[in-house]
Amino acid sequence: MPVQDVSRHLGLNWKTIKAIGKQFREEKFGPTEYRGLCILAIDEVSIHKGYRHLNLVLGFESSRVVWGGEGCIPINLKIFFSGMSREPRKELKVL
Image (cartoon, rainbow, N blue to C red; front, top):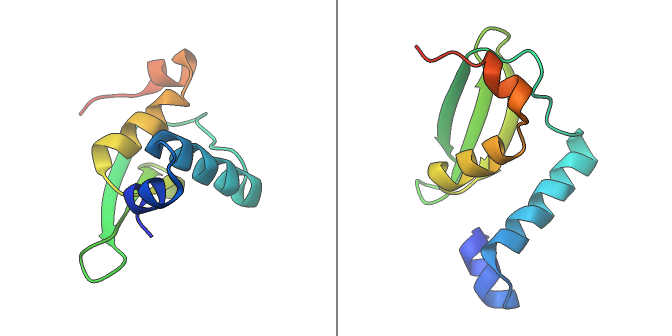
């Protein structure tokens, strides 16, 4: 179910729903590992006939999936980068 629908159904802010999802993913898959990232690849894949999307952030050089989130790319990237401290951000390169 999309975050907005869950938010309306439960009467909670969408940010709260996203935080719960993040906590679940970290408990199941471990925390996001930001170290060693220089170049990011960002992909969006359809997971339900074009209506639901999964956004993936990959370490371009290692091809490892670093982070994933369902929904809108701008919101998910904001969430991804909000967890990244200043040190790993300094290592990123713009191509």
